Amino acid sequence: MSDQDYVAFLNKANEDPSKGATSSTGTTGAATNNQGTRKKFRATQEGVEVPGPIAKVCGKGDVSFYASDADEPFEAVALRWDEGGKGLPDEEEFAALIEHWDPKNAEVEIMDPVDWDRNGQYGEVVDAVTEAGQGNDVRVYRVVRDGVRVEYWVVTTEGKGKGAKLVGAKALAVES
Image 1 (cartoon, rainbow, N blue to C red):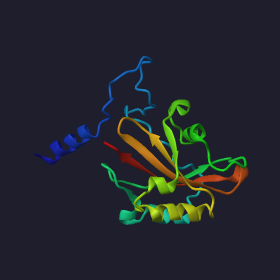
Image 2 (image 1 turned 90 degrees about the horizontal axis):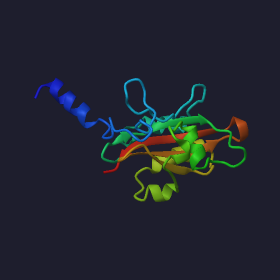
Image 3 (image 1 turned 90 degrees about the vertical axis):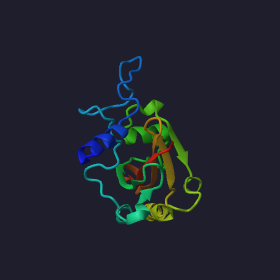
Image 4 (image 1 turned 135 degrees about the vertical axis):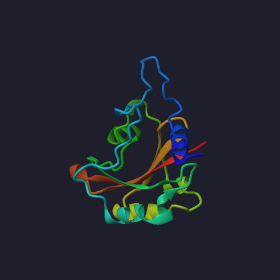
């Protein structure tokens, strides 16, 4: 098998299984870009700085990978979040914040970090998020992308009110 054949095989294997399927509205149910692939959720915003502890852990070898069928790296999260004195967003607010294509119907589950990381594999990630939030509450948001792909967002708030940020790390998981 040539390198080109192998690359073509990998590209075909990584295609969205629902590609080409239509719903009653005539779309696949997800926002797509010009190439027809699903839009990525927004993790950072221009002008919003990623805190040092998070930047450090997201660039750190095997610690910065989420173990699943995909073994994807953790990415930094830094978004403006007017928390209005309530702390972290609810499911729908979170979906809108990350620019989910359908926030009202997004499959978002809020988890406690201890329940998410039962084996203690990601303690360094949770610790970095806790440090960035200066002890504020840390939550894990599990967001379903499609059939077997989900994203885990380990986040906290940094600051209060209109000047607050939602900061943390996220990783894609393939759960088959």
